Image (cartoon, rainbow, N blue to C red):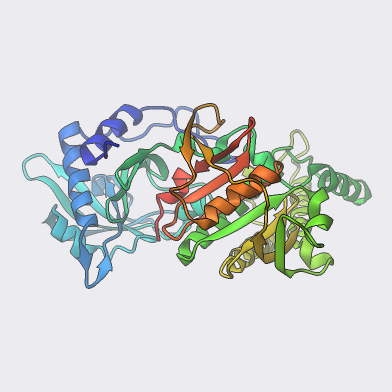
Length: 444
């Protein structure tokens, strides 16, 4: 296998930079949006090579991590600041751009809240002009959250998340990432596929029926909900769960099964032995309960605002200033954090695809014949594949392969200790898996 380095990343980014921006879940990029030009190839290669070298260093025993913004300081409004804007602070005298300066500045420019500002001087070359405080809201587009509309300017941003781990972004949007000598593109994100999001979406018929009944009983007129809203919300919840599990550096497995298997899996079962089973009462269904409350509240609030001419959905949810929506949003992501916490115990967290929490500490007991090969999927829709042996992975992954071989309507999400997120399913007559590239660019 040929490994990739900053020069290869620069080449791919140069080809991808002017491609139309992909929409985040539920978000449409503005038509006619203009982004900053990419620096010429020789400058881009220096930027990436220097960041790569800095990533291999340590600062007082800590890994060097930072974000870098390539933009002139006079093109940033000095009166703005978080949470809606950027607070840029320029040095009295610019600093030289090299790996030692990046290493020294990295603790002051916290990865989650600030960026190191650099630009190209006509005679002095690349230089560090200051620090830009962004606040943490930008992370929600990847980590999951309601405030996903980023305010980072559409300029070149380089994220350094660990040794040899770089991602080049146009503002908040990842263009390409280099990780362990491999380059990944965001088009491999299966959350953008047509088929998989349905596997993470609660049983729409039940929630929609309950929502319609509540709407009919309401004293005031409610707005109609866009049919994609539940799917988009579920994708955000999924992002939050997985990103929190990754942050534990312990690894973990989440198994999603059809709702009709709930009774089977909470009794004596030949596939999964759930050590800690939850009682069959409302708290086990809490995420679904919160979904319904969010649907009802959003429809009611938008109805009061006169949104009766078209369905409302994710964009209205993001833009809402309702205190009730804020509380429910906090509640749904606290529930997601609770699910992630359960993965700290050895064994799998087991949920239904309707997000009913069956239990945790699940031991996979599948007696299916050993799965010798699986297919690594190279695109979102599962059309491009490469067959691999299962001998190179550990027990956690092989157990998930066997489970999906036997329960062919299950989805397994396996997070390894090194932060790789693998989604495993049975598709087109074999076990297949995706490595979740866009999430793995954040390696903490």
